[in-house]
Length: 373
Length: 236
Image (tube, rainbow over all chains, first blue to last red):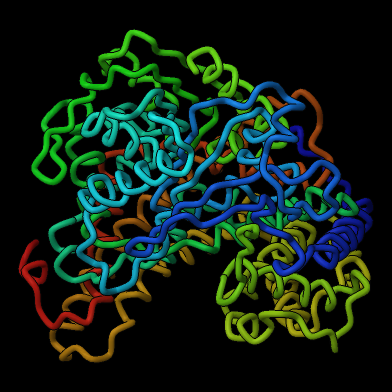
C-alpha cells in the first residue's frame, strides 16, 4: 500500500513557498567577482611550460580580507612549531587546483599553514592546443622535478614531502617510484590506484575509449566534455536536484558563497593535453598497469614497490568518482612499511572543501608529518 | 604577492549563476533589478537557450505533479500563476503542460519518468550534437560519423529506458515501505531522484552499458574532429 499522501489543497502553498525560497536564494547568490576565490597570499616562484609553482603564506592574524601579506610564522606559532620539511602539493590535471584554497573557511591550504606546514603548490596550468603532445613524461620527468628542485632551493631544505590529490595522487605515486630522492614523505588523497575494483564507473566507462583514435583526431580534450562526463555520472542529482536544493540555502550566506564558488570551479574545467590524457586512460584505467605492473613513463619503469618513504593515504568513504576500494588497494603495493590510512565520511571534494573535514584533514596531515619531520 | 584571484570570464558555471539570478528576478525574488549590469551577462544571454531548460524542468516537475493529482487540477487551473509564478517566457509552455496533463490524466510517477527521461536524453544529446559540430567535412564522411554516433546514442537510450523502468519500480517499492507518509512534493521528488541515482549507478557498472557509452563517446569525439578521415573511420 503506497504511503504517498499528497494533499492537493496543501500543494499550492508548498509550491509557492518553494518558489519564493528558490527565487530568494538565487538572487542572494554572489557573483564570481565577489567571491575572493583563492584567498591565501602566495608568490609564484617558477613558471615553466604553462605550469607554475607557488609558495603560500599565512595571512596575518586578523587580516580582514584574507589577503594581507606576511610570512607564515605568526599563524604557525599559534598552532605549534613550523615544520622544517616543506610540503609540495600536486593536483589533478582535470579541474583547477584553487579548489584547495577555495574560500576563507574552505581552504585546505590555509588550514595546513595554520598547522605549521610550509605549503607549495604546483599548478599544471592550462595546456594550449600546441601542447597536444605533452605526455605524462613531460609532467612527471620534467615539470614535477623542476618544481621539486625549486622548492628545495627556496626553502633551504634537503628533502620535501609530496602530497598528490585525486589524479595528482596517482601522479605523485608515479613520481615517487621514478624519483624517490629527495622525497621524505608521501601523502595521497582520494587517489585512483586499482582501477579494476567494483563500482568504479569512471574507470569502467573509460575502458572502452578509443585512445588511439582520440590521439589521432583531437588536439586537446575539451574541458567541457569532461565536465559533461562527470555530470552524467549522477545526472538528476547534479543536473536538477542540486539546483532545487538551493531553496534550502536562503539566507545562509556561507553556504551560498560555497555553492557559487563550487559552480565556478566546476565550470572551470581546463582542456587537457591529448597525449597525457590518453596515456593515463590507457595505462591506468584500461590496463591497470600501476597495480598489475608494467607501467612505463618516458621509457622508465614505474614500480610502486620502489616507494620506501612513509606514506599517508587519505580516503573519502562516500567518493563516487574514486571508490574507496581503489585507494585502499595501495596498502600492500608499496615498498614502505610505514603506511597509514585515514578516512572521512565525505564525498570526493569534501576532503578539501567541507569546513569540518578540511580542519580535520589538515590536522591529521600536520600531525603525521610532524612525527616524521 | 597575491591570492590566486580567479577570472570568471567565459566560465559556464558563472554564466549559469548569472542566468539563475536573472530567472530569480523573473520569479519575483531578491532585490536585483533588471537594469543591474551583471558581469558575464552577455555570456549568459548566449547560453540562455540552453540553460533555460533547467528552470522549466524544475517547474515541470512541480506543475506536472500537481496537475496529475486527483482534485488538484481545479486548484491549479484557478491559481496556477499564484501558486508558482513562472518567468514570463515560460508561462505559456507551462500552461500547455498543465493542459496536456489534464487531458491525459497520467499519474505523478509517469511524469517523473518523463522528467528523468527528458533529462537523460538531454545528456545524451550533448554528445550527439558534437557530431554535428564540424561543417568542414565532406558530406559522406560527416554523414557516416553522424550515423555511427546516432546508433550509439540509441543503444545508450535503451539502457536508460530500462534503468528508468527499474527506478520506477524501486520508487513504488519505497513508497510502499516508507515508515512515514510522503506528504510533500519535495520529499516525493527527492525520493525519486534517490531511486533513479541508485539504479543509474548500477547501470554505470554494467559492462554492456559501458561498451555502448564508450561507443557514443568515441563516435562523438571522432565526429567533432575536423580531421577529414582517420583510421577510426574504418574501425568498427
